[in-house]
Amino acid sequence: MAKDVPTSVRRFGSRYGRRVRLRFGELEQEQRSLHKCPYCRTKQAKRVSVGIWQCKKCNAKFTGKAYTV
Image (tube, rainbow, N blue to C red; front, side, top):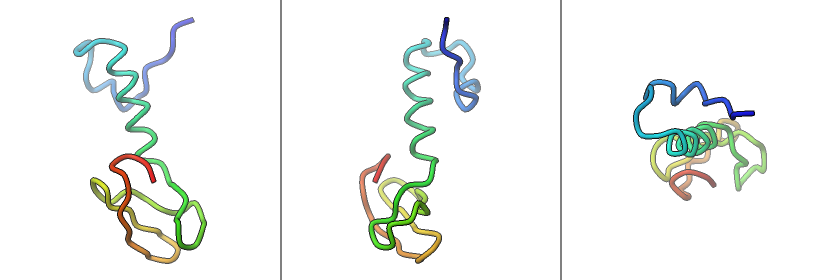
């Protein structure tokens, strides 16, 4: 059975091809989810901008990779 297209990439319609949209959707879903903070070890770090992350609990701001910590 075919894989459902993530809701965030439905804005592209039928443009760019199915495989590219699926990959982009997976990447975007991961970058917008909460990640583990390297300081307090809780799953509260959120991506602020490219390479900048901030923990909601300890309010630590740190740099990391562009998409995942």
